[in-house]
Amino acid sequence: MLKQRTLDAIDDVRQMPPRLNGPTATTSLGDRLRRKALPLGLAASLVAAVSFAGLAAWQHQEAQRSLDAVGDVLAAPDAETVHGKATNGALTTVVTSAGQNKAA
Image (tube, rainbow, N blue to C red; front, side, top):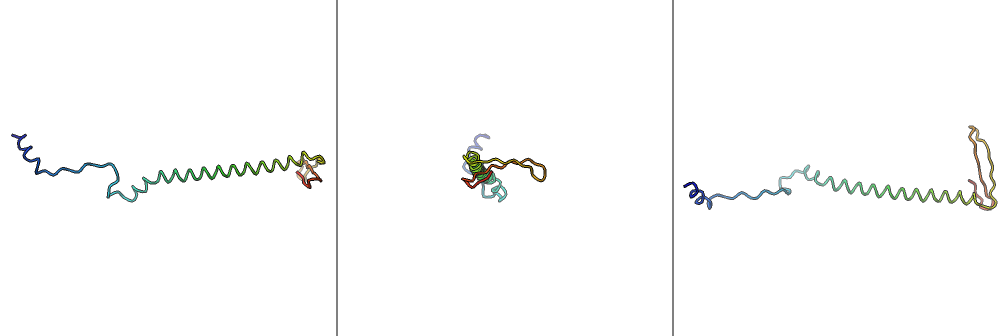
């Protein structure tokens, strides 16, 4: 008897819509911003990493140029070395090359 009443009522009962796990129309602005925060944070981190890598490469090139310039003065055939003492007592060494018009 209960089975028959249930079967008879099936056509009159409205079915509930399926539950969806995705965003709904009632999603708040805060929820949407939190959902977008991770990709934005990752993008910002990537930009920072690339910037730091570029800065490190530039610094390496500048250091290499400086070392090359000092090496050129030290390797010059007319290089002269002078040792001295600064006013604060520190020992100093200067290498000059008249041919290159440089000192290190």
